[in-house]
Image 1 (spheres, rainbow, N blue to C red):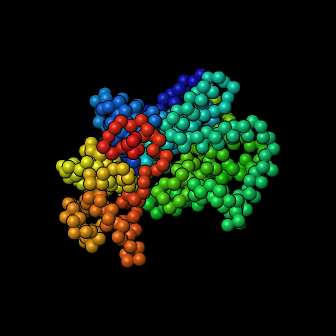
Image 2: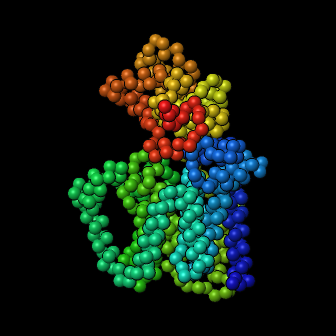
Image 3: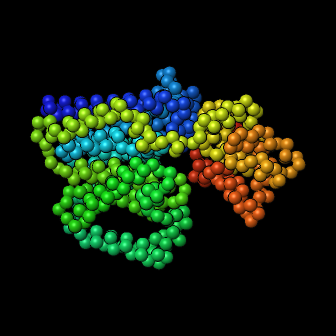
Length: 495
C-alpha cells in the first residue's frame, strides 16, 4: 500500500513523464512528414485498416487494428502514429517503475526517467514501433508464486509475441535465465567455461565452432557482434553511441559481478537476454538482427540494476535526490522536446520525404497501374496516393507492359546507351534523383550494363536498396494465400 509521501512522489513522476510525452507529441505534430524509415509502412497499414477493416499488406500484429480503430474516431493517421509513439514511451517508463517495487525509490525513479528520455529508446520507438512495444512489456515478465503476477507476466509475453516475433528470442532467454536463477547456486565454474569458450571461438578464426554453424546452416550469417556493428555506423548519432557504450560497460560490470560473486542477486534472466547484443549477427546491411538486439541493452541493464537492488526504502517518500531528478526531468521534458528529438533521431536519418512527396504527387497524376520503386517511395506513394507500388523485383507472372519503374540515382544519359530505339521514347519523366521508365525497358537495359565496363553504374543499377533487384522474400508468400483476386497478385493464378 502506498504511503502519502510515496503516493505524491509516484504522482509527480507520472506527471513529469506525461508532460514530456505531450511536449514531444506537439513537437512531432509540427512536422509535415512522419519520422523513421518504416513510418509510411505503418501509416499505410493503419489508414487502410481504418477504411476497410483489414491491413493492406498481410500482418497479424494487433497494433494495426488498435490504431486503425483509433483513427476512425476522426484523427489523422499521422496524429495516431505520433500519439502511439509517445504513449509507448509513457507506458515503458511507468511499467518499469511499477515492476521494480523491491528496488529503492531512487533507482526506480532514475530508471523510469531514463526510459522516458533515453535517446536510444526514442530512436527505437521511431524506427521500430512494434519492437519498442516488446521492450515496454519486458519489465512485466516475472517468475513469481503470486498467481496474479504470473498471469500478468504470461499476458505480457503473449502480447509481445503477437506484436513482434523477435520477442521469442528474449522469451527463451528469460525462461532459461529464470530456471538458472532458481536452480544454479555455485555458478562460477559455468561462467569460467563460457568465457573460455567465447575466447576460443574468436581466437581460432576459421577453426571456430561458429564457422561450423555457418557451414551447416547457410541462412545464418555470422559477422561482428551486433553491438559493435551498431556503434561503428557513421550515420548513428553520437548520443546513441555514447549511451550504448555506457550501458555496455555497465552490463559487463554486472556480468562480471555475477561470474565472480556467487551470492550476487544479479538475475540471470536479464543477463542472458542482454547477451544477445554481443552475438555475431551484425552486418553491413541496415539494422541487422544483431543490431536490433543491441538496442534492448539499455532497458535490460536498467532492469538488472533495479532487480539487483532488493532494498526497500522507508515510507518517508525516498531520498531528496529522487525528488530533484523529477524536477529537473520535468523542466527538460517540457522545454526541450526538440533537443530530445535531435539527439535521438536527427532529420538526417529520415528519407528525403520532401523530394519523395514531390515525386509522388507528380506520379499520382499519371496512369500507372503498378510502380516499382525503393521502399521509402513505395510505401509513401501507396499511402498518400492510394495507388499500387511494390519495393521488390516484379513477380514473373505480372504483365511488365503495365508496370513502370522509378529508377533512383541514375541520369537519363547513363541509361540511354543501353536502351533500344523503341525504349528511348519511354523515358517519360525525370526528377532530381529519379527517373521514370517502363519496366520492360528497364529490365532490358539493366541486363546490358556490365560490371567491367562501368562498375559504378552496375552497382547502382543492381543495388537492391536503391533500385529493387531482388524477389519478395520467400517467407512472405504464405501470408498471401488468402488474398482476394487482383491484377498484381503475389501468387501465380491457379490453373
